[in-house]
Length: 147
Length: 21
Ligand SMILES: [K+]
Image 1: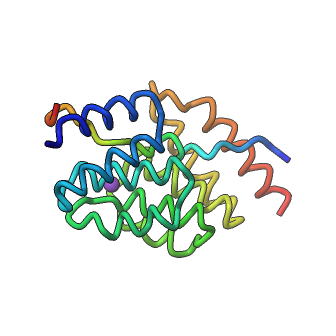
Image 2 (image 1 turned 45 degrees about the horizontal axis):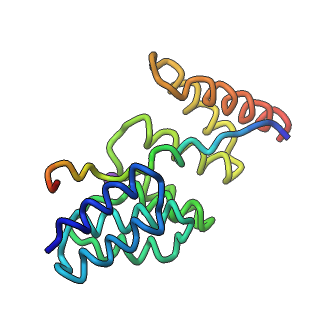
């Protein structure tokens, strides 16, 4: 019976209890190894637990789920920057894709390209991350000028 | 060193489980 584990998973996600979420995912997958929600949640929980190598394995196991953004993020955190950038380039355009692309470029010391993305992103209005992007644009511009 | 925010951290989200509950 999956229901108690789903209730536990839902609560764990809402409360940010990622170890508990992981255990609930494992319980769901013991019942049904192909449970798409559990596979996807397991990968996301591992990322939140900063277990990026394990998250990559979980993403590979979650066949059928589009977790390319999450995979690119893991590659970024593992400092596999060229691979991360290549994968990001395959994603549909969106603010989250541009944020990830810009920070990979910044960490790759490609400051001009990072600054250009933040500049373009700041044209999008009513986004909750505007002040952080202003800071990132300033950081990237300063680094580009110093390079 | 200037302040820089890894914004993509905020974009790693769980799927909704509403349809299962
Ligand atoms: K995705």
